[in-house]
Length: 140
Image 1 (tube, rainbow, N blue to C red):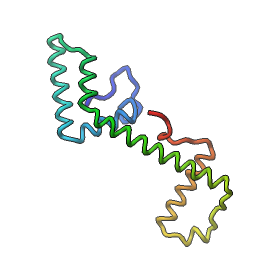
Image 2: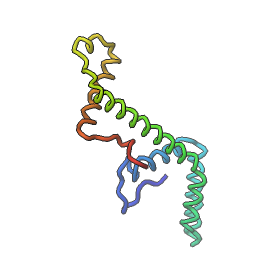
Image 3: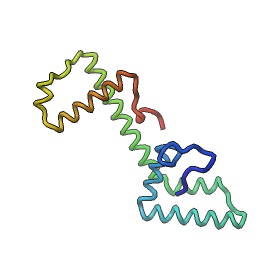
Image 4: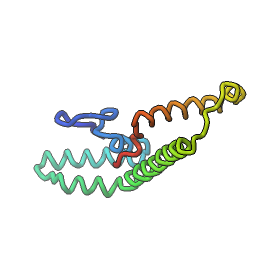
């Protein structure tokens, strides 16, 4: 699939945004859809060379052909946004309840996996305290 043109700003891995990159990734990673995208591009070039290219119709064809991948990306984004809101809500709830911080002894008694999670949660708390928001919470 073609990446961002000269006049557009590439914000994510050479694509205009995460959603576009993720749909392209889904299309490129499946042989059937990858072959279809290449064939559609080849046909579009042939029609352009004949002076018969209709960009609006081509866009509609792509939208129809790859609607499943678009739905997958939207569902994934919605799920991740819900998880991000839940994490923020849990953190804010703990703050309101005045849940005490763990002591060094309690942290030391944790398994390595739990300690890593605790450090991540603590860093996320600092991020939220500083007014940070998750990219997942931003609308698509």
